[in-house]
Image (cartoon, rainbow, N blue to C red; front, side):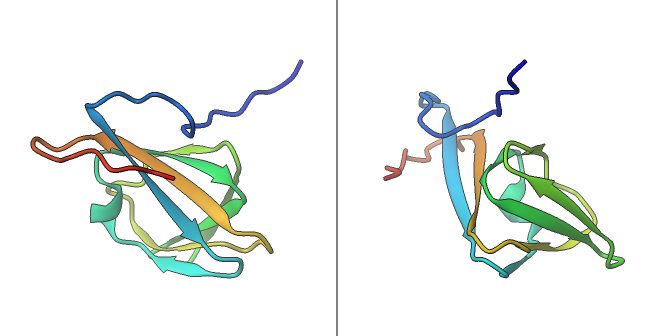
Length: 103
């Protein structure tokens, strides 16, 4: 049985949703900012990440993982791998927000 992984890229999301891509370089760290992830469903499209809690413990997740990062007690998002990690976040578009092109 083949295990398909969810991908949000190349999907027609419609006008009511916005898509944002975040790349974390190999060995890179991104400070956790809860407001970046509010109301967003996040998929790890490429690579792997480690979520670092406020207490310093880490949990590793890989490609295809689906996350809800809003409101978590996190300190940082790490990329422990030798390839870039690509996180894709989809959220409801704010009233009056114009769609952006993603190339």
